[in-house]
Length: 275
Length: 323
Image (cartoon, rainbow over all chains, first blue to last red; front, side, top):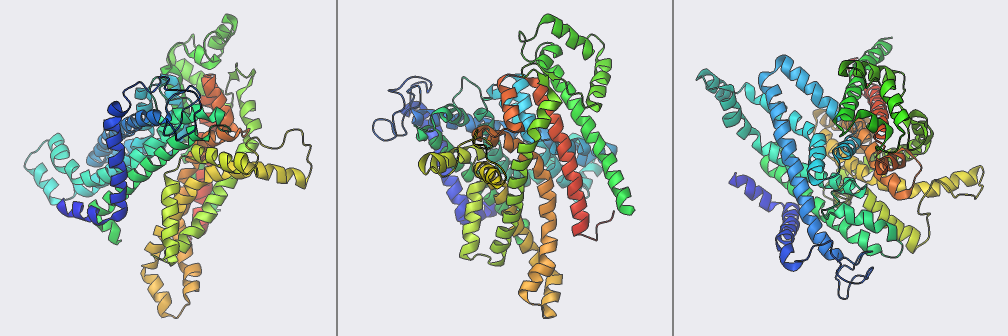
């Protein structure tokens, strides 16, 4: 584990990603202090350019773009992390069962996984949100619903490989229950791969969320980056800043998360690096 | 002959996917709040009670769930995707007339992404850790994190509003009456920015994959053998490594084709490109779920076809493949 941390710390790109994400987390924590007002509230005259009283300008309704972005950060992280966790739990359960029990169960579950990997993910997510009506929870459900197959395939592969190892067979020989073997012995052994793949999924989830919110499927009562861009689109010609800054926020966040994910991948799975 | 049998086999194995989509669509209709008829007709209040009754009867909503499914299945099998009350038109017709612009956009973006991605990946891998490699890796990292719709908006700000080089939206200049090459040039000018916004993410993906794939292949024994025989480096790259390194790209390209359709929804919306994406966006705005479900169904069918094509390409690239 400490070796892994040391390897991660030697990776300059990963450290840069960690720094970006650290700043973002700091922003999320400090948001209620810096911008105590509701981000939907009027802050000043409409369409003020950046600089001056409002660092990043104001939007069509005179709301402070900087405050909107700060509150949007919370939404993006919440949905990104929430959807990824949901996908990991669901994917690990399905992949774990398939990889542990093998046989017909495995065939059926993996066919199902492949099916969900084949169908067009974004349209499926759109449909789910449209049907459940837009809200933070339906966005999390939709993004998790299109993200779990990669985790399921990963866990299944790891479980198949672990199944033949002596320590697993020893546990079975000692009479440990299936649940005990899976939860106490096999899952911890694939934790590092799950963390590495899961961290990359968060970036994808944030991009998906931005796309959904841009198309008007975000929670209308919660500020989010996609929502700001979709509202600013109409005045792109006269007020470029409304669309520009939230996009930069998305880019930096996803870039930071991807760099951390790459770093984790190399640090936790050094075998992959040598290959 | 063996090839034909293989294709037949692949076609049959593709059928469960289509069937799965139909089942999924059916479940989604019944998951929606309210009567399925209101889903099929668009939001309640838009349709007359008579029309709703006709819909209920037509889709067998007055029958048991099992019968309903059979009716739905037979409708889908006949490509009877229903009627869009909002658009006052047949759903399959609506989709078909939008297929042209979307195909043009997707093929352009996909072709650009694959070709440029492969070239950039190759350049990066051959000069490992050189400045070229570092620049390509850095740009692809950034491109990998950029939302396509935002990139589109930024290009509009710079190239349309700022510099006035390219048109902001549409398929061609309305009322210009261009013909022949003038029309082709006009459409191409409109196509540039949507295609770039859609392609960039995939370009970055393929460049990264291609780089990794080439690096993996250059470590193989057959490369050492070729070098020992006195082959030139260029010949080793083009004659041996390239073909092997392409295999994983082809696989991933097939998988990613489905995401390309999703990406085109957002990009078409940004640029007002008159394709299936804009149709989906409008359907979303008016909560025309039936139209959305039909688009979902059609794109899934398209993906099945693309995956078949990928299999064919794979067999052609790799003669070792057992068919």
